[in-house]
Image (cartoon, rainbow, N blue to C red; front, side, top):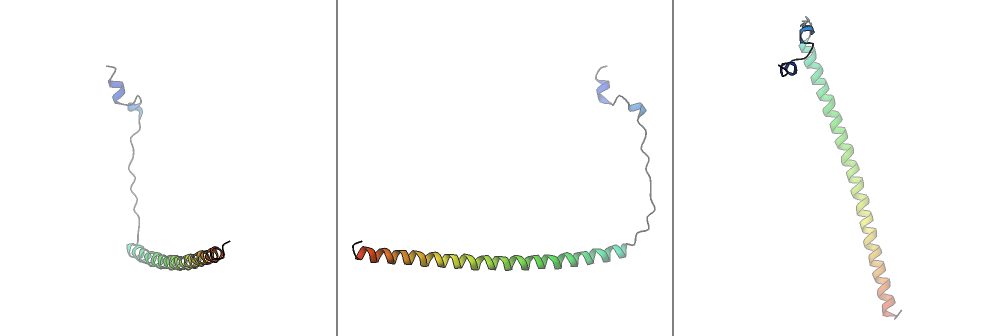
Length: 91
């Protein structure tokens, strides 16, 4: 007997029944399709703009990395040359 009270809510008899409400909506499907196509075009254009900006940023970063790499190589070369000269002079 005790198990039955766990199988259903205590207020099961008092629970109101849900009503289904139907709406008669006048939806212009052609207009919705047109708006969806416009939105798709807008999103595509915006995505292209974002991609272009990202590629420009990538190119700028690549140029800066290459410049820093060249500076580092030159610094190492200068250091090695200076070390060699000092070593040759016995310093």
